[in-house]
Amino acid sequence: MIALIQRVARASVTVEGRLTGEIGAGLLALVCAERGDGEAECERLVGKLLGYRVFSDDAGKMNRSLMDIDGHGTSGGLLVVSQFTLAADTNSGTRPSFTPAASPEVGRRLYEHFVDRSRAVLPCVQTGEFGAAMQVSLVNDGPVTFWLRVAPPAPPRAIPAT
Image 1 (tube, helix red, strand yellow):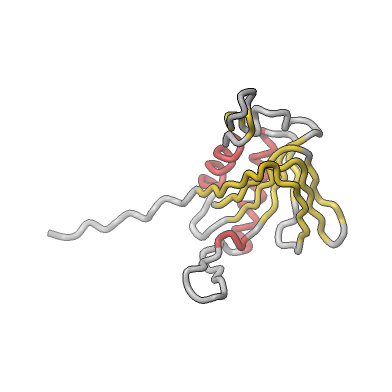
Image 2 (tube, rainbow, N blue to C red):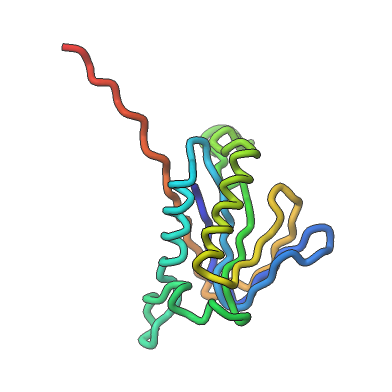
């Protein structure tokens, strides 16, 4: 699974003019499931994202995670938006291929699992709407942006016969 995370001063997402999610200071996470991903990869990515130290400590160093800052109240939190285009294969030509992305059914299931697991740990979790055309607004703080990826385990390699 992939998450493109941005430290934000504020962020929101709307669908057809309707506000579906809004946060103050915190993280905006654009999330994508890839073929072969399952709940294990999803849970590892949630853990990595929530513990990722991208917020400044008193010395100005990035030593605090979302769990360490005041992301538990209405002043901040996590905004999770599905974005299958993060799995695009851009290695050839000028048109991306989306074959590395999980199917819409699997993508939705893992997106919802990602949100549920995040909400189990962090009460202030807002979302977009899976599969919808969304408008995302944000004020990037820094700017600070990271690409996180948790890959499914590689298939076992065949042992050559001797």
